[in-house]
View 1 (cartoon, one colour):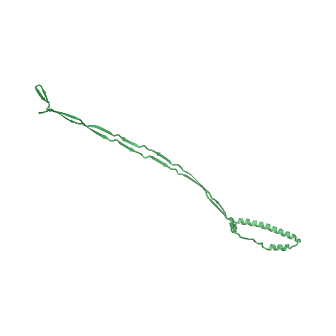
View 2: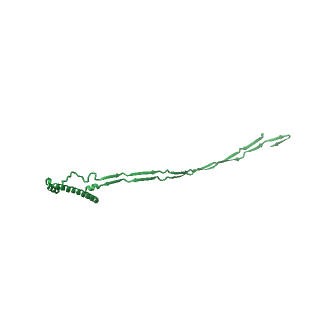
View 3: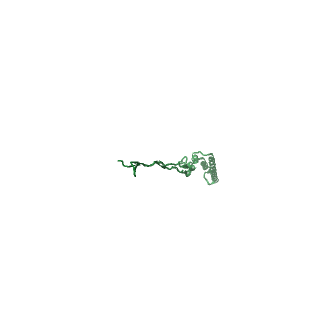
Length: 196
C-alpha cells in the first residue's frame, strides 16, 4: 500500500562576515630643547703685599755709609770740633788773662793739650739693636663674581596620530531554499482518479 508523501528538503541560509581591523598609528616627535649656559663673570682685584727692609743704620754701624751721609757727618763733626776748639781757646785765654791770681796756667794748658782724652767703651753690637727696620703691608685681594642663569628653551611637539577605522561586511553566503516534493498523492474525483 502506498501512502501519500510530501517531502520537504530545505537548506538554511549562511552568512559570512568579512572584517577589517582598525589601525592606530602613533608617532611622538622628540621635543626640541635648547640650553645655553652663559659663563660666570669673575673679577679679582689684588693689591700685592709689600715688604720693606731698611738696613741703612746697620750698614752705617759697620762704617758702610753713603757718601752724602759721610759728608753730612764730617760737616757736623767739623762744626762740633770748631765749637769745642773755640771753647777751649776761650778758656785758655781766660786762664792766661788771670795769670796774676797764681798757679801755673801755661804748664797746665800744655799738659792738658798734649794728652789724648780717655776713651770710654763698654759692650757694643754691630749692627746695633734696631739697626734693621722692617715694614710689611699684607696687601688685599677682592674677589667679585656673578653667576648667570642658564637659558632653557623647550618646544613640545604634539604626537602624530593616524587612525583607520575598522569595518565589517556582512554578506549572505548561501540563500535559504525549500524544495517540496510529492509522492503517491492522488486526487480522487467523481468517476476518476488523478495522480499529482
